[in-house]
Image: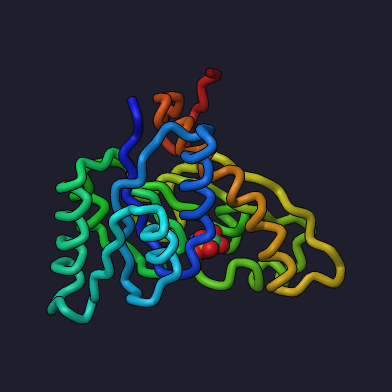
Length: 203
Ligand code: GRF
């Protein structure tokens, strides 16, 4: 079954692009039904529209409460019968309301080896800490911040002269590989969660 995806993005949208490219080159059997953003000028919205995908800016400022804003997003997601929600650089923390009322699972990509360096500025956190390796993580979203069960991780070596930019550039290459791969494994029904562990069945 082709997976119907909703993507939530706030910025440049390179992970969204990787997902759309993987669909186009048939390594990912999915369709992006809708892209939602909390930022009117998000490049992610342009990238989606270029591909003829519905892209909607929903302004959090138009809603009195966060859950009303999130309910508006959930309505869009439900109307499009999505069976996976992918966060791709979505810069707001989802409330427990969203997570509990989502019609399907939610995935996220984070630019560190979780549980190290959750939250903002993950690359700088890794550099400041002095770790020798960092990387990226695709995980299911739960009610915490970057705390859901881990699906895939990829390692990137930290070089002596690395800056936030140079490290983020190398990690991004890996992000673009593992996110579509994780989505495909989910679509094929190959991800089984037992407690915190996600078991990936062979295809
Ligand atoms: C990526 O580094 C992702 O890991 C993090 O936010 C960034 C989004 O980049 N969650 P992009 O908008 O997909 O280019």
